[in-house]
Length: 148
Image (cartoon, rainbow, N blue to C red; front, side, top):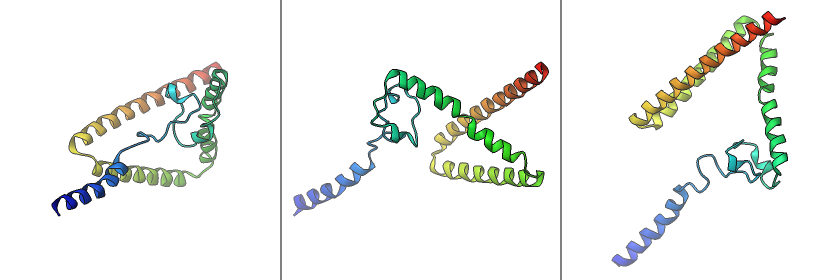
């Protein structure tokens, strides 16, 4: 009886353990387009390139194309946001900030205190990088306006 009960408990626990183990890694399965080996362009939408077996030339062209398109949606968004009245811009900014704070709060609720400290450090580093990038963009815009 005891052996049967032990075997039954073990058999019941195995599927749970198998489901809990990450078989795909932290970002899901890597696309097999030849780019994953280099750590490039992983993420949503890359499954459509999975079985293409791109040549090195195709990978280079693909990477160039993806890099060129990277800022295009931002430019389009900025073009339409510039047409919004200031009150709508401020309301949108406030709503985005509130959503970001709620998201951070939900993330922090999942983390242990040690992980929260590390998360906060990463967040501060990211904010510093963002500020440096904004300073650089402002400097670049000022430089370009002086050239004209």
